[in-house]
Amino acid sequence: MSTNKVLSALRYFSVFFAPFILPIVVYFVVEDLEVKHHAKRSLVSHLIPAITILLFIALAASPVLFGHWGEESLLFGGGLVWLGFLVAGAVNLVVVIWNVIKGIQVLK
Image (cartoon, rainbow, N blue to C red; front, side, top):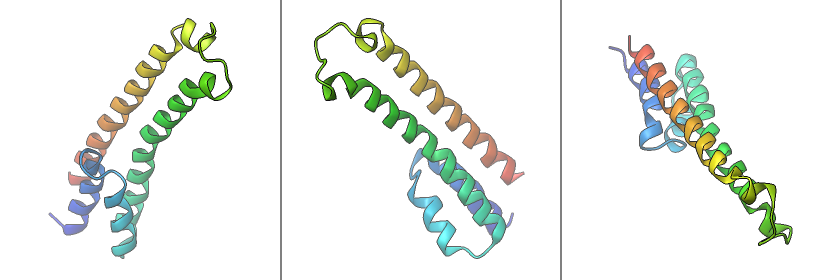
């Protein structure tokens, strides 16, 4: 098995231990174009859950930021917070499964 295949697969598996650091480091250190391609794809896939969580936090904090805390709002009164938790969890689960599948595909 070549070193490039192992590096490419390791970047997808890095979702478990170093989601942002490893793809960035490998992208700038390794010269192989295929490895760089996998580094970019894995970095984007690792950013998706972070962006989802940041959007959910911004949505959940909006009543506090705009001075509507304690009032009946769509966000808290309608249970949108729990829906946000479910959506963020589902997105994270899908991204982890996708990264594992891509890592295994690269190794084959």
